[in-house]
Structures are given as C-alpha cells and as structure tokens.
Image 1 (cartoon, rainbow over the protein chains, first blue to last red):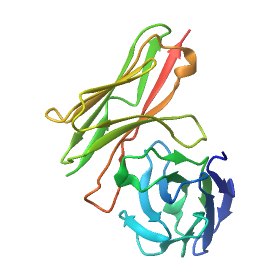
Image 2: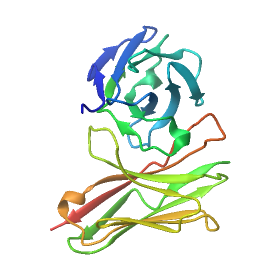
Image 3: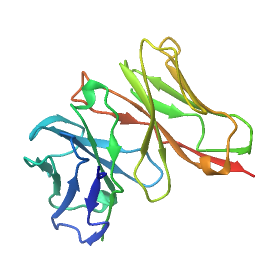
Image 4: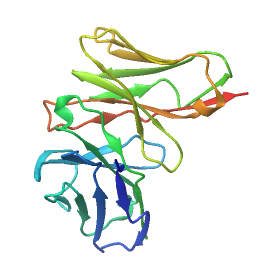
Length: 115
Length: 113
C-alpha cells in the first residue's frame, strides 16, 4: 500500500504566475482534500474532491481551483500568484469523504515560494 | 467569531511525565474532533478521532477527552519520551459547512531527556 505523494517538493514562482501542484492519493482512497499551511499556523482547508466532484470549499478565492482524476489523484491550480500564497500546500486522502469520520492521510506537502 | 485555541505555542516537559495539551473552541458545533502530530517539514499524521458522544478515547500512551459543554478537548501523552517531541494539532469537522475541517495553530511539545 503506497502512501500519499505530492510533487514537486519545492517550487519558486513570481507574482502573477500560475502553478499546478499534484497529489497521488493513498491506494483505495476516493477523497482528496487540499490545505494551505502558513508558517507557524495550522492547515487551512482549501477544498475537497470526492469521486471527481468538488465536495466542499473553504474561504479561498476562485483563482484556487482543482481537479480529481478517475484514479483519484488530484491537482491544485493557483492563478495570478500573490506573495501571500507562499506556504506549504498539503493534500490529504481519505475514504468516503470527511463527513464519514474517516481519518485523513497527509502527504509531505509542496513548499511554494512566491517572489 | 469562530476560534480554535490550543493552550500554548510551546510546552516543555521532562521525559517520563504526562504531557497535557488543550484545545478550546468557540462558536463551533463539531460532530467529531481529531488530533494530529506534525514534525518539521512534514505533513500531519493522524493520531486519534473522538466523536461528540464519546467522553474519552485511548490508544496506547495517548488519551483524548472531549467535553462539548466546556467546548474543550484534552490530549494526554503518558510516560512521554523525547521521540514524542513534535507539534500537535487539533482539528474540528464542519460537516454542515462544506466539509471544511478547521485546525488549531498547534502546540509544539518538547520532551527533555
């Protein structure tokens, strides 16, 4: 059984650019959630995908968008990058959606720096 | 406004003692609460989940309590070890609000030998 993987591990972009982050969920999991974690803070929920459909969204602007593929892997896209987007981006997979009380398995994260 | 407060930014204890971490919340009605461990540069690792109708949950040296009247959860690590040093995060569900899971800022625990 493979764990949650994310790519790339680190990324440096400039303001205004666009970025795509990738996540492979744990084998057998059909739900992926994305979080943004600023230094010294807890993760902040961006959105969740369940069986390829968006299943919940936090307080993030529309320039944060996502996709989930038939194999349940997922992408997070951020357009028009701002300096405040610099953070650790985490994805977490689970079985059946957060509402079914299942634990989430987090990936190691992608560290995004916006200059 | 909604708030999740974890007792302090940092907690230092001696090896062998019991560490007690606090998670207080305001203006939430979670159906369950989770505790995670996070090491520097890594993603959080799930430790325990406790439902609103459960008072206490145990797993090896870990114990979690959940008091929905006080709006508080306590997380205990007994017989603490230096390997327990990490940041511990509590997280509340919001199943009624777009499945938005809310995390506290965490408490950094250091266990000294």
